[in-house]
Image 1 (spheres, rainbow, N blue to C red):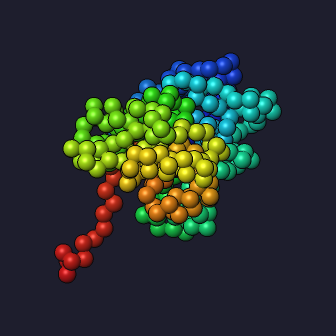
Image 2: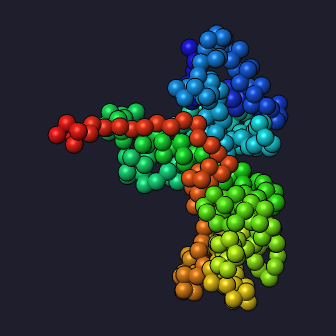
Image 3: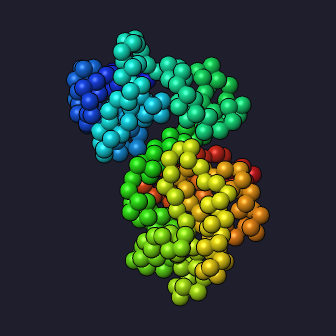
Length: 303
């Protein structure tokens, strides 16, 4: 029988006790540990695109990451954080979602899922599952998956190189309908440090209407202040620009948001949360694994 992802949390944590380890190797090792049959190892999710056991190991790893117990030093690997080492030193019998609740990072992660008083957007305890409709449960799980994905996307972007961040913005803006071609867009946005402007994207093929960009790849908590908004506004005035886009992987302070409003809404602000949502919407850094169609009776047809 394939263990659930919460049961796998402690074994996944223990698997990295000796240092950075490969997720692929851990999946193979744990499959041996649980004596999974060939059929169990190869069992696929309903989408038919990923093995069930692999998926559960990755979910266990993702939640441990949200709690701050592991980190991703390189692609396809993970290692224990100091907190992860400390927790293993306590020899816990089990680590699950209830156990992870004691960590502030995990609580913050859950709070990003939405208002806890809303049963559709919050994590559901077992006794709540019976109180909502099946379609509400589907939407809840869907939102949880997307919130987890958004958090991981944002973490990956923050840890990427400046060049990667520039290329990501190029792809995102092209997917949103800006820019003439990938080559033109990449050339425009790569002009870093030009008087406080990190890039410019043409909104039409002739470049008559342009969107100027400021991009800051900051860590969580290193928020953009009102001074940086005023500096960007000054740079836009020098360029005689009508529109500006300020993108950050962190957040904007309340004074920065108010300053942007006071300057006549010429500057659009996109923080880390919005950036991750746009990446999901336009499939930048992620891809569709499955498409589910939620259907209901067509009353007009039978009427």
